[in-house]
Each structure stands twice: as C-alpha cells, then as structure tokens.
Length: 251
Length: 193
Length: 193
Image (tube, rainbow over all chains, first blue to last red):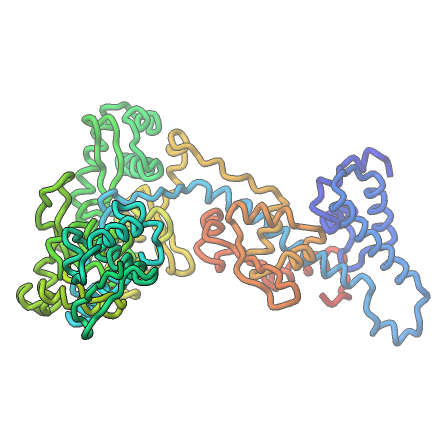
C-alpha cells in the first residue's frame, strides 16, 4: 500500500473501531465475513504510519491490533473435526458484535448532528421575573407564627431570662478583672469600709451601702465585706435568713 | 401566508429571544422593514396582546424607541406562587425570648433587650416586627432617639388576650420578686436595690 | 372574564417569566389547578400558538412533565440578524458519538461507553458534562461505585426533542437493518450477534 493512501492521520478516526469500519467500507468487505488477514495487514499499516502524540489514543489502537492478531492466529489454527466446527464460535464474532454496536451509535450520532442543526434555530428566553415579584415577601400570619405558644409559656421564658440575667451578673464575681475597670475596685471598697466602720461597734450592711447604689456596687461592697471578714478585720452576723446583715468591726 | 401575521410573529420571536429591550432600529433591520411601519406593527401587536387576554405585553420606552416583553401585572400573583417557596414560620427560642421581653418590659429599646438577653437581638427584633407581633410605639428621648418597641394588636389576638392588662402580672412588684428569687438562687443575700 | 382564557394567559406569563423549564407540579401549584387540567390547558395553548402564527411556542419535556417557551424555528433568519447567537459549543464527532451512547444507553458508566467506542472517553465525557448535556444521575452498585451518566434537559433542548422517545430509532430493528444490509451485500449469514 502506498504511503499516500495512508495519509490520513489516526486522529481522523474516533478509535480503532472507526478505523476498522473505514477499512471494511473502503474494501467493500462483508462485515460478517471479514477477511481477517487482509484487514489486519491494512490496519497494521495504518498503525505504522500513525502520527499521533496522543498516547492514550495510540494505546487503544494497539490493543485492537493485538486483538486482530489473536483472531488471525485462531483462524489459522488447523480445524478439528467437521462436526465440531459448526458448534465452534467464529473467532471474529465478538469483533463483529462490537463493530455493529459501534456502527449503530455512529449512525445515531449523525442523526443527532442533523437534529442539533435544526434545534439551534429555536431560541429560549431568559428569566424575566419582575422585580416586584422577586422582592415580594409573603405576609406572615402572626397567628401561624405564634402557633401553640401560650401566654404561660411566654411568661415562663421571661422568668427564665430574668433569672439568667441575675446569674450573669453574679458570674462577675469570678471575673474581677472586668470589675476593676469600673469606678470601684474591691480593694478600694475594702479600705472605704474599714474607714467607715472604724470605731463603730456594728453597722447594718444596708446602712453601709449608703450612697453606693447599683448592682455592681452592692456586689462589690458585699465582696469587700467577705474579704474583710476573711482577713479578720470584721465579723458578720445574720440572725435569720434574709434578715439584716450586721457587721462588727474588730479593729 | 398573511404577511402581516408573520411580521407580528417575527417581532414576538425577536422580543422574546432578546429578553432585554430591543431598539426600533434593530427591529427595523431584522425585519427589513422601515421604522415607521415597524412602529405601526408593534402598536398593533400591543393591542393584540391586550385584547387577547395574553399573559405578556409589549412595553415601549422613549415613545417607541425601544421595546421589551414583560409579564402582565395581573399575573404577578401566579408568579409569586411559582417563585415563593412557602416557608414555615414559628417562634424560635430566640424570638420567644425577645418577644417575652417586649411583652413584659414594653416600651423597650433594642439595646435594653440586648442587655437582658446578653446577645445582639437585631435579627430577632426585625423578625418580630415582620411578623407584626411587635411594632415601634415611639422614640426614647435620649441621644440617637432609639425606637421603643411594644406589642401589637395581633400579639393580643394571637395570645387570646384583650389587653396588656391580661398579661400575667409582671408588674414592678412582681419583677422585684423575680429578682429576689434569682438572687436567692444565686446565693446573693437579699438587698434592697 | 373568560376563565379559561385567563388560565392560558397565566400559563404564558409563568412560562415567559420563568425562562427555564417549569415543571407540571410548579404550574399546578401556581395556578391552583390540578395537574391533568393544567396538562390539557398547556396542550390547548400549544395549539393556539401553532394556529395563530405566533413567534413562540411551548415545548414540553418528558411527556408534559416540564414546559418551556422558545421561538419558532421559522424566525431564525430574523433572529440571527439581531440576537447574539450564543455560540453553541460545536459538538465534534467524538462528542456526538459519546453523547449518542449516553442518550441511548443511559444510565451508563464511562467504562461502558469506552467499551462501545473502543477508545478511552474521559475527555469526551468531561466535555459533555461541562456543556451540561450529560450529568451524573447516580452511582453503579459495583466496586468503586462508578458514576452513571444520563442526559439533561439541555440535551433535549439542544436536539429539539421533548423526550427520549423522540430519539431516532436505533433499537434492535435498526441493528437488524444494518445486518440485513451487510448480509445482502455479501449474501452470507453466519454470525450470531
């Protein structure tokens, strides 16, 4: 075969099956009775002349080459008894099946191509949702939102919140650092209290607070009292639960 | 084939495919018809769209310099049903907390709510306003004039009460009780604040 | 007002605004009309579009499961003069071949495609996924759980078909045709395919 005849790049073929179909077509071979020796020779000639840098494609072509050679050698093997021959499968059967199946999809792909050309003449629109619709927010039925939440539940939530709020303030105790940023420091308050009660026999905690209103002040004062008690400057009495706290100076 | 009809169809196809506004010049070029005629055609097409109880119409800008297709406003309702996925709304814990504060402390500012909850509550407040359970009832006479929130009539309706007097008592006395309770629990002694 | 007419207009408005395919379910919800009735309405609308020499038409996908408006092919000439034709990805033979295998054999794995094509097809499959003509439709319950590919709505649009039933026949009958053809040429019958 002349080189010029092979002057088709393998890239022109979709794959080995495509090439085989081309050879069958060109030689007017019967697909059900492919002259395997001839087609293998022609196939190999194409492979030899192959110009492709695509190693994937190359290897696919080589796999087929190996298959063709295998089929060829099977067919060249001496045949056994006549009877057996009829039952024996043609070594080319698998290949023929593959070629036919491939040919079907190849045919379909041509049909699709035509259909695509026709279909490309139709244009689809773009989304055109009016702004008013896009920005629309469904009015919510408050009753649906409330659902089965009762007034009692609402109250319970509020109670829990109030409790939590106090807890949060109380936690300040463990975070003196944040308090010291306030106007009053426990240390300063301790000194103040010591001065306030110096010379007094005893003083009511409420009286001691005096001008020191506010939650933080109460807490700081209370902490200062506890601190002074610990360090032995004062003692603290409370006659009954929730009763007045009475502070006695030891100085 | 009726030539005019085809021209109408062509205009419809063009306006539909373009999506955006198409100029009279462009239409004239595409239809190979002079501008005055195109203007007349579009005018007739507009009438057809009106008459035939169609879902779309042709709007024109700058006295027929540009045309565009758009949906008739009559069908916005259907579009809304198409676009809006109904969401289920309910009072989450966050909303419930916020609502309870507004209910019992109203009128109240957002900052006060946040002070009680200890976290920013803008989203929750906005949601409750959106749900029409709370609303602006005034402005605080303070720097920035922050909004004061209170509950709405819908709030009363939804909780089956006729006025805020029906709210379980959380008047100042009651509030003090709460605090006392809380303080007791926290181990803080009873202090007059 | 004629109720039916309004329904048609509503469908037109919805399809126009949506741009993309609208499902029968969505239409039914938006129109508050049961699905069978909507199907019938759209069917009549399709006929109206045909008869009235309109520039657009309603295409349906999967036997009326989804609907979309598009221009009539007759007005392609006018449209290309104006509308920027979105340079549709040119489908090479390799892509078309791969696509036809997916179309007819879906759901199908890449390995199956490669077996039929006799050549590695990763690149072609990726391209088709990129063009949104095929997509992952599931996983094969086999080692490695390979991806199963199927065609998309864009595939239907691209080839102007409304469902896979509209694909050209390549069923066993077609296969038989090929065989017969070949057999006639050679006058031989001996291989079981």
